[in-house]
Length: 267
Image (cartoon, rainbow, N blue to C red):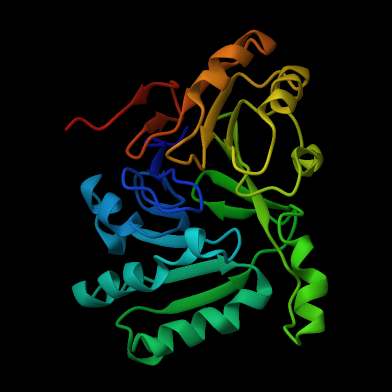
């Protein structure tokens, strides 16, 4: 069993900016190091508020390149540069995002050749796991960006329109982070069991989610990617549809991946 294993929600907002939440970002705390999964605006501030140092993160996993999931990457890397760490960092992302991400870093004067630490980029490949010191992180494709394909091709923008959900297996527990979905059925290809489901609410219907969860015997659902006007009452009215525990994500919510305990920041 991994001695320290926590999932910390750094940013739980939907795509429209929130006055109360940072954009999509989640931290897998493995004790010896961390894995940052998505890095939207405000992620760095909440990362520091949670008591961590930027050099402690060894991997960043980017599920797709919508700004609310990736805009915080240059700023986070700048913090690593400023502290002068020599600990390597690998950014795992869709293959066609690697070149543009490097260009953004160059534009921000964060030249890889001048970083005090080795900086690597690796393509996320569907079904191929990342071994993260006791945790197995596996990406699975979603259809979230497929609607952009025709427009991109017609305007000369190349790319695979990749977006991934992430399955995390650690300490005998399986957590799935949906990232953004084209349809709830995108999650059907992810192997069962799923103990906890961290699922976005912007692109799926909750009345379809509950029977999906019940059929797969998911024990806990954490609703994230929440807008400021999210209808909390809709969750209460749908509650009889599943026996799963239902939580609303909050920035700073910490899920202990060993005993299941949930804690939150205090003011």
